[in-house]
Image (tube, rainbow, N blue to C red; front, side, top):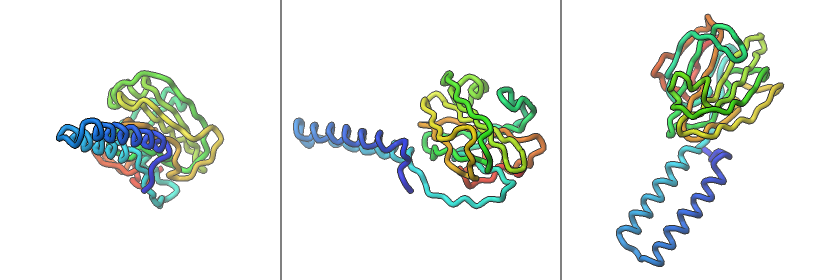
Length: 217
């Protein structure tokens, strides 16, 4: 288990600020009940933020035709829909909602080349809102597998998550489960698969990024 690079500076600054506040209160006010409670609250807040930026070391072990979960969370949508931005055809959409307690590393669901990538500024509707996938801040990435299958992955910011990070560009070759991005403080990731794909999860299932098999192409 390590701390993700997106959280290291924030955690260091937060630790210094909280330590300064508590040390200052101790010297100027003394060891009162209120000061002790502030110290406990500070520790709890720091630990909550710390757990959000945890980055577990995982072993990717999947078959080439398998589609793995791009994030930890819960499957909230499995439906056939039309992907309007790039693929412009009928697709099976699988959406995973990430709560603030989930690991927020985003991983590639398939091995392939980044055929398309685009960032969209947008709104901050709650992640489960029907229009969040088309109106919220988001990124769209399309991976083309060795067999020529295009798989679209979309990072979507939510009401709390207001910063999407990505580490890829068009033309990059990515392995199964490679880290391609991070969303801070809870949001959603959508995967769009060809119609006819064998889906192996159902709505309500919990997922582990890079480990849970969503489907087979």
